[in-house]
Length: 471
Image 1 (cartoon, rainbow, N blue to C red):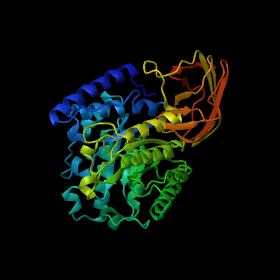
Image 2 (cartoon, one colour):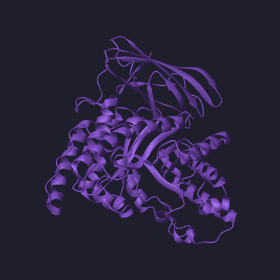
Image 3 (tube, one colour):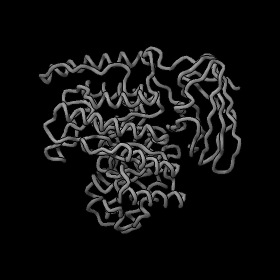
């Protein structure tokens, strides 16, 4: 199981953030920002079993304020540009791993997940590929070689990959990219197969924008994903970018759309969240933005298979939005001076409301007393299994969180009597609204079904961070 650093370390790190921010404030000539209160975003998110991530600008990792916020507030990082094809393979067969390696090392140093972005995309291709003339077979080989080489490079270090990015037009038809024009829709399945072969344990996603609602584009995506599953193509999840506009966010509709994809047995994630506004910013717009961030977070947290949320950038200073949408900006949770905005508080409050308050920062896992667990595979077949778990706790609980590991390649299909999420091989189960209160000596029971293989009888279970005895 992935181990997280204790909160004491994080509190010391956040003190460093405050000091760095003050230094940056002096350097840039503005007042030192007030820092967000404990606990951090990553602490409240981890307590719900979800990740909270951000896109990382490789050129800013040397900025102490920026890197300190990234390391202390987020437990997942996505390369904003450093893992895209033009950055990784600028010349055919010649790879530049510097930016990707820096991000992976940063994540390892700070106990973070890595979300790989992106392998096959119509944009930001190197000139030799964009303008080159290749036979169909040669282009397919170029594509699968690139996927294989990049995923192999980071095997075991990148937990999720956007394998194919932005494959759709707004009407739900497949985009006329170089790959589609020459190879047809088969390029998508081939990309996923190559990625799975290169790293069987990484979660493989298709990712797109303007698909957060039930519309023509998301319907096209739904049909494609359903077809890929029917073909046995190794796809694990769907990423919904959520580049949104203040005052134009429908949280319940986002939740319903996430749920229909989750009902296919797939992981879903909010992958590139930002919510822009017409400039200039004012307090009214910032409060509406906060409500909109909360609506998106609540939508994800209401869907058990929604594994996490990635915001697309830390601060308004570094956002891509003003360069693309004239007159718009202020889309991020921190402002241009690295001050947390109401949107930051809204995200944090959403995780807390979902059971993500870790309590005393010196003791993030509530004590459970002695616990014992029975992990029983009640039914198994070649490609799956049904499991029942019973945990007995020695101490009264007003909320609980259990964790265990599945064998490599085995995934959750569905679960009951809890809120389930999976990160790599580790499964986290948090209490449902109706079974969080457990008396001393009482039991917690939940169950789930796997796909891709069977779970193992007697798997060890932890409760509140404490490994339980076999029961």
